[in-house]
Image 1 (cartoon, one colour):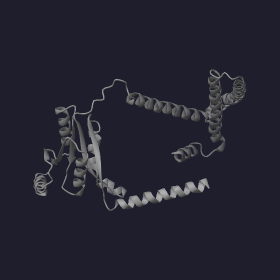
Image 2: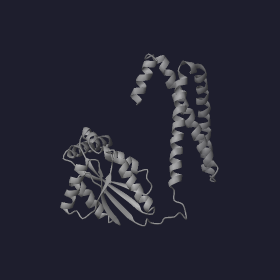
Image 3: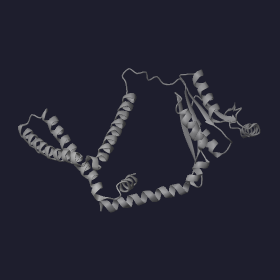
Image 4: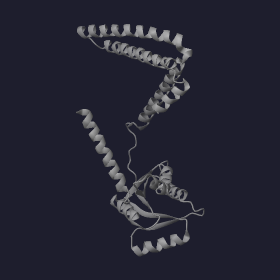
Length: 287
């Protein structure tokens, strides 16, 4: 991003150093002035609570030094702004204002999130009545069996498998294979007149919540772990859409159950190489 912005400035100012230097001068003296002002406020705040004479003298001396620096850099800044504003200095001021507003907005967001998620005395912390587990099934294969095993291990109050009937022949074949395999878990078939997967599942889960509002529904979704970016495009797209919808449903938890394909070893090797290179770089820098 910095490189792109630098290229934009070079093109906009035709690589004219005399014009570009105005941005640098304004940025430098704004930084100097604001930092001196910050130190001035810092010493003033500490002096309110400090009672030791020696420490107070040191703080007063430091504050005087920063006040002198603030006066000098502030004076230069005013002169620069008055003389160079229309020559390009206004760009730096606009950029600083935008960054300031952006950072303040981010800080307010984090403060709102902290306030919203803070513990409140006396708040109801009643446990859910039951945990109802739903395992999504597209076909009976290893990822499905892994998701079922994971759901069983969590010991939910109820456990059922769920599939969407987008193709009657495929659904009939799945039901038959399911019964022959002796899974021991009921397979619920949800109709989908428009051959759509996400909405029928979301509506079914919402129906469970409506029927028992104090229950928690955990939806287990088998997912492939792949090693190439293009494989990610070919797999897990329905799971991503479904998770995006279910995460906005109160009382519903989504659990992804990974199944590692052979290609995932490539990603693991790549991560291991990157980690080794990063560790080597750190050792070089520390040495």
